[in-house]
Length: 147
Image (cartoon, rainbow, N blue to C red; front, side):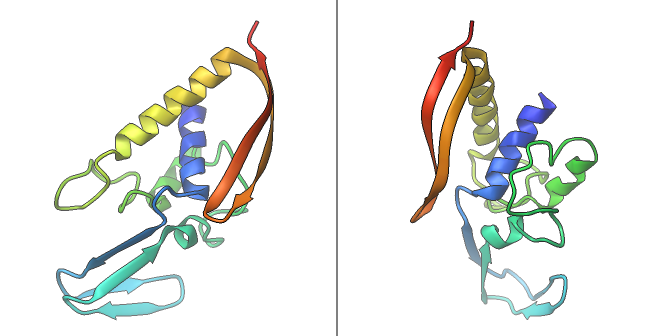
């Protein structure tokens, strides 16, 4: 099931369901990136774009490419860079204090179940993958039931 979980995490990395996050700083903080430091004062608005975070080439090798096993084995260390629910995937469960999506763990569980169920029911399939105005699109062109 490790690969199944990695596939779900990779899908969330490539196409985060909620790409933008924002909030007011509760205290003065310093945020550092690879090449800059930002001082944020208490009360200032902070805005994050998960599309940039999940496709950072300094963190993820071939960031635009879907790599099913990216988070398997040593790749599990990359989970600390996977932000998709107003917090890191590896952080504690959602609470009112951390403002993470309350369905965060449910999304991963249901996605894993759906993926496994799909491969139990079908032997082969073909798809057309593309992009639409607000994200990605996948259209199933053919399905062959499992024998």
